[in-house]
Image (cartoon, rainbow, N blue to C red; front, top):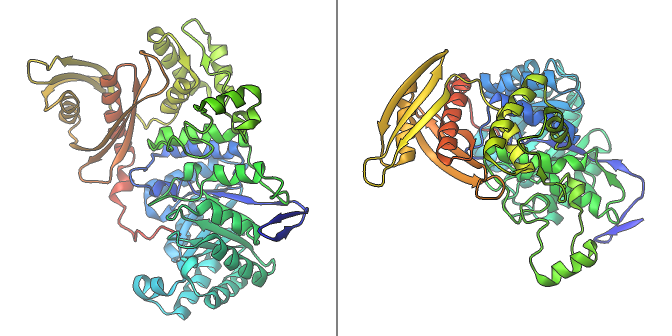
Length: 528
């Protein structure tokens, strides 16, 4: 047996279910909205990762969310597909319809149980809250057998009331009771005590789950403490993505359980850890939100050793300063320089397979064409170049507008100007315009051609790999017609071309999501 904070952990192994909410709670990060194609690719990667439950979205939020959940339900077969629903008939009905085609499906319904939420947000009595929760679970059971109920703001809820409402929803058919620390307020020992008491009270009638936010930087620690005290499901996101300070990071929870098997020998997950790094990079490329360089497990510096003493130790024995092998998370430190302009399609396909990409024929052909164009201009192509290139190709929204060419005037002695040629409906349109700077000139010219006026909210440029000929990755966040900001991505060795592609990419995503944006007028209470 093993010990953890004076607790005895038995040696019988239990599986901890990993409930990934990157596509729902993660998308609530400011500026992290994703189009349908991006969500489908993320869901496919989460399935390869071995996630037990994928919370694919909030079906009642908009037609766009509904459509994405519906398509993910048809694509994913090895993970349960889940939709969030408030404790409202309309929400539950939308969730049931959106996941109807999934092989394994779950409805996750919730209502707040803390006094402050019931009084000020819901304006309901405890008895009314229980009745609403029971109705939601009973209605959800008409669509699925697997129903999860969340006590929103459980971290600040009265224990007696949580027991009362849990009894009621379990009787109504709930199979999982989730105890979210919605505002990230609790300390590990407090979460542990809450989970222990609820776990002992429920006595196996339902699985106890936790969903910890990271406002105090304790989400992962709280999740691990919950596991020790009886939680058998943890809700988390890739890279810890999420609103405010984010959620418990999937990669940190999973790798802690694996690395410290001396302590957590009683627990295992179904996660294929070699897919952790590919999952992290996919999410970062799509959302434009990079993990901090010193982020545990997946940060750029997670396996970097600069200190001379550390380097000396690493050369003699990697275990002197490295408790996790990069290979364990799918990061091959010894095979990063790959391919060139003479590489063939078979070699390209094989390399993508090793990087975790399983492309259909059409997507493979398009990616190979992009690779050849890049290889003509770039001497050395790295794994991260390929990840960025393929991700950009796989997740692009339908191309209503397509950039054909871009010509810029040297603005050192004059007014910055841009001439842009764009294709729409097989027609090529050429326009020119001026701006306060080169980027401004490009974007304003695109606006004139498209007829949509965009407001640039954020603009980021980073080098995908290394070298003077490094591939530039541009991420923009643009608001069109006053709607919430949309992310666009562009890749090219030429930063100006990458910028134009990113802006047009954001426009195409906006047009593909326009129905979603126009209908986003439901209650914004989407957090648990």
